[in-house]
Image 1: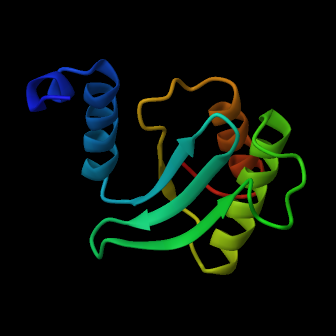
Image 2 (image 1 turned 90 degrees about the vertical axis):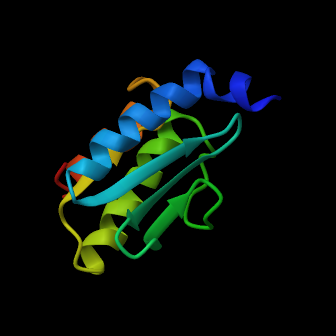
Length: 117
């Protein structure tokens, strides 16, 4: 893929726009990646460029897989790990994904477990 076609890709533009707003808030970033089979989430400190806490549907504690029920479990597990690490306020970075389905399930489960965003 040429550089110009990559730059004009709608998903790339959407993720850059969302990420720019999240980074401007100055908070830690809860980033979500959704593949066909699994879902991954991590809390990132952009100032240091480090991942502080992560959870995915591949973790041994999660048996549902990457469906909506698995996404809820990942959100709950991530929130528990974040609160345990002393992190309570984050900004939600959905990337290029719409706030719907598995992404929404993960976000609402993280909120219900105590994360504020």
